Length: 179
Ligand SMILES: O=P(O)(O)OC[C@H]1O[C@H](OP(=O)(O)OP(=O)(O)O)[C@H](O)[C@@H]1O
Ligand code: HPA
Image 1 (tube, rainbow, N blue to C red):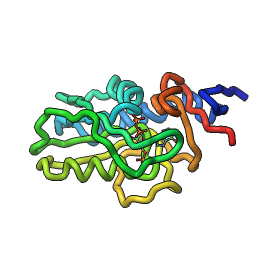
Image 2: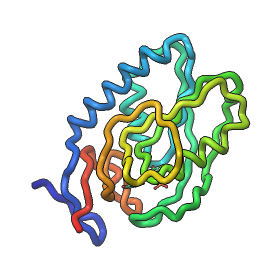
Image 3: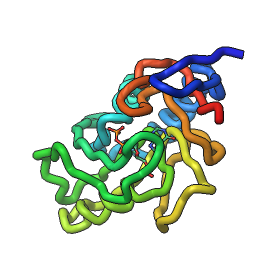
Image 4: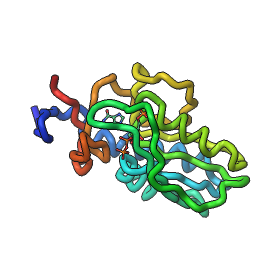
């Protein structure tokens, strides 16, 4: 079993990089069909989504697709603080745009529902949500997710952009904490 030690905790590999590559390719294929002609604006929610957004965007072939970035933070160690801090906004005008929010993970749903609330007054034509990973058993907010890469169990994970107290984002596979 492939394991890694990050700070004070041990993690074991739970989703290999190749599986994630496959899942992201399928998401891109579906988006390329659904979004053609819509000139979508993708919004990557930093930090965690940087790797997913990069992997996905390389496979997006939709004409005049754009990407921008916003930075939010709500986790401390392995748990949500319940409060979403906006650390960096974007300057693009969302009016009449098809917007796709890119998340690495929807866990409790607090971050994505807070983001949707923040941008609902910007008069976008439509706002969609795409997440690489989704923990249905942890969800406590009522959010519609348009594109889900994989549903996963309610365990703390790292890798592929996701961190434990700032470390582990660089790992290409996903690892689950060992109790
Ligand atoms: O559904 P939720 O319970 O809100 O969790 C999901 C959010 O948590 C992580 O961000 P985090 O606040 O850890 O900031 P980071 O992206 O900089 O790691 C992740 O990137 C999502 O944005
Ligand atoms: O399981 C997780 N791991 C790392 N960051 C996260 N942000 C929400 N859930 C998680």
